[in-house]
Image (cartoon, rainbow, N blue to C red; front, side, top):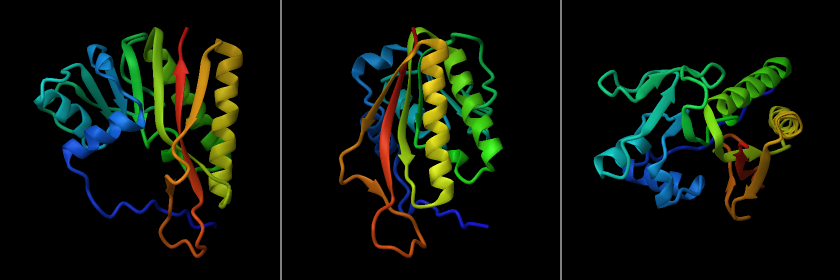
Length: 201
């Protein structure tokens, strides 16, 4: 079985660094913080935490398989494939370096279903006229698992455009901004990152 490479994440970021990375990675503007936001795959919820502590926004909900804090009512336990919110509840849904990257290494049939289900759920909880932004979506072909993830993601985004008439925009990050993996025997970097914006009509 192919060994799945792991992204090198040696240094833990502070809450402020995470917040600023979100600002850059999903192209957030000050106006976006007037919206009700869902952060899918929010990790420790640092983005929402820093925004609330600095009076930037108290309307950011964090979704993670492990609930971040029972004391924070806007921290919710759940998966992207079955989001526990009502239809059209959010103006903006973001997922930074999470969806679809977290599905890397899944079996082909499961991979397709998880990407399809998660995109469908992101669409469902987004209001008409709202937007979904997927930051740091990795595209690579060096490993079979990468290639399958890349192709499955592209297929499902095309299907969304076709069946739901959404506008999908892919924006590459700077060419020097690539991901290197641990235990990778070759010297070249192997995955380019993209911001994907899905505009819901």
